[in-house]
Length: 202
Picture 1 (tube, one colour):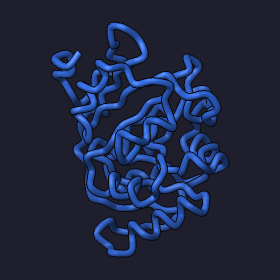
Picture 2: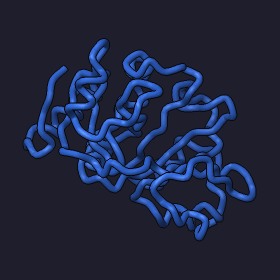
Picture 3: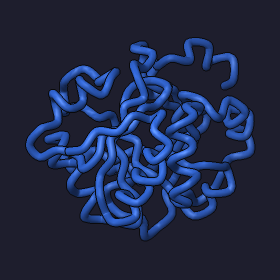
């Protein structure tokens, strides 16, 4: 496990290289640290379950760089969901009906996939530079509190460990992203996270 500062000019390029090679990267987001693998690398996503000691029945949320990327991930975007997407970039995960053929790592038993656009500069820059969706599950052992700095990540995720940890300083330390299911009518708040006034947009 290697550590690079997000302020290092080589950090973004190296993180992209690791991801494209099928590696796993821990990186900062606006809520906590996340574990990233390119969704094109099935083995890397499987490693995330081992690193987190997480049940494979629990899907991995993903980051995208722009709304147009949803076309490859979801069956449809309900018209009313566009109002919620005005909150992107930000700590809001939307659950859509997944397109057929996506890796099982990304799709829950209910056929849904969770997607968001991050407002964190490094996280958004990483998925943009990668050019494809990136997993965004929290970088911690399953069942333990989220990690809010690189040292916590390295202390928890040791065996096995991610290939690279990008130290972006301490994250907000607050609540996780809000999750809203837009595959049903009316939309349903699955997790009341950091966006406390989400009901105003439903």
